[in-house]
Amino acid sequence: MTDKKIILTGDRPTGKLHIGHWVGSLQNRVNLQNSGEYENFIMIADKQALTDNARDPEKIRRSLTEVALDYLAVGLDPAKSTIFVQSQIPALSELTEYYLNLVSLGRLQRNPTVKTEIQQKNFGESIPAGFLIYPVSQAADITAFKASVVPVGDDQEPMLEQAREIVRSFNNIYGEVLVEPEGYFPPKGMGRIPGLDGVKMSKSLNNAIYLSDDSDTLAKKVKSMFTDPEHINIDDPGHVEGNMVFTYLDIFDDDKEKVAELKAQYQHGGLGDMKIKRYLIDVLEGKLAPVRERRNEYAQNMDFVMNMLKEGSEKANAVATQTVQEVRHAMGVDYFGKF
Ligand code: TRP
Image (cartoon, rainbow, N blue to C red; front, side, top):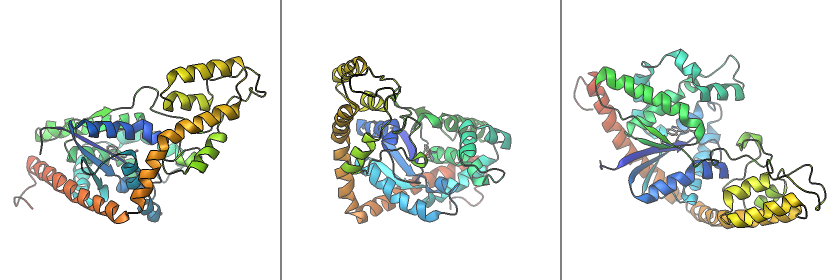
């Protein structure tokens, strides 16, 4: 292995990725990848996706290729990053099982992200055991590659805290084998971009703009955006806070002077919602058209995409297997030497 710092990150394949994923995490990954300073592992977490979709494996299978296409579309590059599939790396399951003994049930139940998800998913009394323990399997994902940098959205901080606790307790008991990871978070204000309606952008809320949306869909979605309900006539003074069009311009328009000018005009009165939405459509088209084009090109070549995942998984498997051998050795369960 190299002396470079190692990055491991990933996404659950439960659907296509949207522009919230893009500004919240994918852009960071692409920049880190292109800096050339890291060894990059990017994982499609199909096993984690199954923890709450066990009855719908077809969705996960379909989403796997969608996410792979989204990765390629935003500029993740198999020549610079190892892109792989979680379920194809058996070592991750073995590590998870060892780590589970270092974590209490109470600690898992207190994980704030898991707690929120449990409420949102309406599991009631039937929380799948695999779901409750997914933070432990995530610690396995990270440590199997000895990753020290984990670029993720803000909601993943509790996962990293839990992973660090597992690393500390493992190293304490069995000796220094594992590496403590740090999160690498999006720039301030980019962590949670709201959806078209002003609520958190999410597949399930049907308020997302996808990287794969064509230009008509994009335009239609922008036209449906929540603006200022009090801005009825063009000449009325309007509000820019909480107005999604301006929220998006703040995030996506590089011409900050122009945005300031438009805001002033909107607040003063005389700038219509349709006009400002058309402007936003142009801004988003400018950013998303190249992504969409690249995505369409790769979608014509699914053999390439599947082969990339296969080769990435083989490479990742070799690395994770090496770590699991060190772990067995540290724990003294390598009775017969290497397997
Ligand atoms: N939990 C992440 C998500 O919300 C996916 C994931 C699985 C992950 N394992 C990981 C992210 C390891 C970073 C590191 O989609």
